[in-house]
Amino acid sequence: RDIRRPPAADRSLGMSPGCTPALLLCALALPPHACSRVEGRRAAKGALRRIAVSSCSSVGYLEEQLALDAAQHLAECAAGFHRWPTIADAVDEETSLRAARTTPHSVHSDSVVSPRNTPFLTRELVRMTEEPVLAAEECAAIVREAEARGEAVGWQSRFTLQASSSEVLVSHLPLASTILASALPRVAALAATLLPGIHPSDLRVYNAIVVRYDAARGLDHMPGHGDFSLLSVNIALSEGHAGGGTWFQALGGESGKTIQVNRAGHALVHAGSLWHAGARVDAGLRYVLVLFLHCASYVDHSTRLQTRAISCLAAGEISAALRLLQLATEVNPADAENWLQLAIAHRRNGDRSLAAEAGRTMAALYAANNDHGFAGLYNYACDLRAIGSLEDAACAFAEVARIGELSCEGVLSSAARSAAELGLGSCLRALGLLDEAGQALERGLAIEPNAADLWAELGLVMHAQGQEEAALACQRQVLRRQ
Image 1 (cartoon, rainbow, N blue to C red):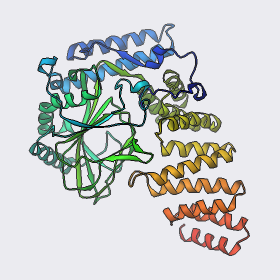
Image 2 (cartoon, rainbow, N blue to C red; image 1 turned 90 degrees about the horizontal axis):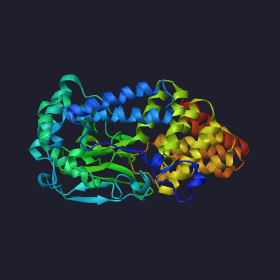
Image 3 (cartoon, helix red, strand yellow; image 1 turned 60 degrees about the vertical axis):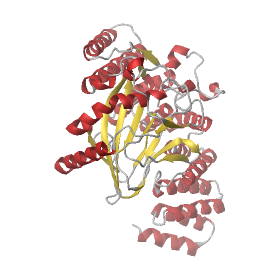
């Protein structure tokens, strides 16, 4: 989600020659401690006043939106400092706490989250602690309080908005809040190891939640996503479950890599924008304390523009979303997520050609960074099919099916993987490649035997091959599933 460095052949990916380094950097430097309780509120109000003035003046749309980014960032940092002031206890280097020892994990390239992976300036964007940041009894106390809260008012998913897991806000847990407040200087020291030149006291808590994965109830995973945070910290609160962990698309091979933190109190810290998922818990209960951190001196304009555009799409304001996403791609043409969201906006606007154009840039960035997104590539293939580019669509569906086959267990559903084979089969049938179409559809049925659409498409292939009995058998399979 952050700004991403374009591959060497950047002009082929649509980079505007007029983009200046200042625009591509996309980071606004703020005073290191601008977000104290008083100064933060004053700075935020001042920025909001400047926005109100600029909307009535000749200041351009870009400057207006960047000012809005800064105001929102300052306000969120001020609120975070007001709620969690102990994060700034280590005021200078001499009194800073030693960061926990960690094992680093490296992403595929220098351009996964930004040019030179700014502001991290390293490929080591994931770290797992070798020692706890919370004591075992503290973890157990947080779990008990979270369970009591969940029993009283119900476990919900209002922050992550995921139906496959449940959570409670730490701000609703008095004891957990006290424990976290005490631990925040240690946690900040750990998180700041990913940010050279940034002092731990510059970090701010945007939000903190306790996530529960329950295998018995099917609330056992979290789909792929990027966080609205510069840094995310996952602290294991429980042991004894089977499976689980955090899967990262940009680690390991093409199928990504799952990192498991199985000891209570130990933590995993990562760049928030890295695409990741909560891997499926096969048995038992898994509890995780998740912190979302901003940095007071760094504004991630790319993510903020993109997030506002997504909100506009959700509200049906497609024109506003398109304008924001066009700006996001100009400010940061190397972020594949910006192009993915732009494709969605064009698709919602009924223009599949422009959606496919945006998807092509997204796919090129994915390939350059060895950082493949299944859903984005699948929709890109659907756009190509919709505009009649059947050969390109077939190639795209084949790539999506390959990525699905390589995916880690629990990250992609069987329905998603079989849909890729269905798309491939339909394109191959339209191209007259009937044998190959049948093979793709049979692979899909091996993944999802009860998919009526796959049986229907296979029946069309059988009919085109003159195999009427087989076509009728497929039709009967469809009727059984309706």
